[in-house]
Length: 452
Ligand code: NGQ
Ligand code: ZN
Image 1 (cartoon, rainbow, N blue to C red):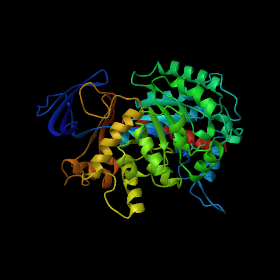
Image 2: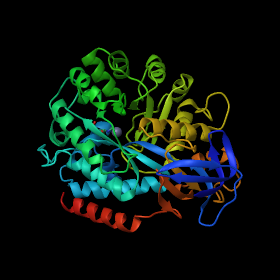
Image 3: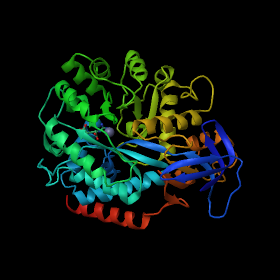
Image 4: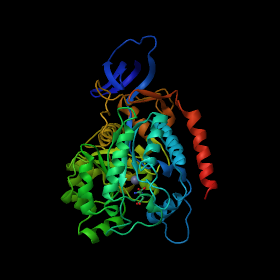
């Protein structure tokens, strides 16, 4: 049982709310209740967000790619450094890094993660004895931390638009569709050992890493599970795809792929107004990664156009250069304010920006990960987060202003408790596996640095 002084329920804020959990789900929600001995008492209870886009291993490069070399620095030069970083990464290091990342996500208020997983093979490209070795490492990290996992094995077959050959660091990613299908089967089998809220979807990496024929063969492998794809992140990607396929990436997908509510286009930054409206109306959840998009110089998302077309959205920490839910929320809104020279941009009509962004990201993130979560309601997965409303950043605020405070003023340290499908992994602001996971992370990065 959880007893909350205040909780955000689907029909609004309520006081003295007692929540019953069974089998990882919310069994009952009672308003105006009495606390009983043994209840976990919290202050402000919210639906916890799903982090819909992560490449866990990139966390270990944080701070290593912020040096301007001679000449022009871009997404593409960052990518070269990232590929080089992969020359040595071992399965054990992958697991230790992912566990640290998932722990930090839970402490920041995310109950679940969509791991867009594309490092499959050994350096040089030879598969491991178990083709899904690195998927198993991601799953082990999820099991260690208790985070809800939507594992997204990635199809990455070509080095660039027009079926270019894979090269260098990309060799660790490569599969044709047949081998990808085997890897997916192995990952699905391995996921059976995880809690039942685990999901396995698929992720064609991007149009530049696949081709129309392969994509048509790969998509049915998803069944009813989520489909994630990077799209329209950088102007050069839009140009390359246009030159090759005669249409811009989002335009091409809308015309040739069965884009619907199972789809999560990641970034979707560089779109025409027609693409923006068309993609929003397809029901797809835009996977926005504001901190990484700022860090990589991608550009701002067309938020007003997306909202005007009633588009769904969620948040992802992508490169994990910094894992902070509050900062992710405010970076998204600030990117719009800086571009439009305006305030309070991301809300339709009138209303609280923090409330619109938080509730929207809770619902959209859960849908993108195939999780029955995002609302504090009987029957849903118990993905819950509690924050300290008495924290100086929040103590003057009530109702939806609490979400504005969370979005614009608070540090992540306001999170006191977090449940991933009922697993109570953060207590008193600390993850229960901290003492094991953090030293293992330090050891893994020290080893990794010594090997390069
Ligand atoms: C990724 N990064 O999947 O991590 C890519 C770079 C690639 C972003 N799209 C890798 N932000 O393009 O091969
Ligand atoms: Zn990504």
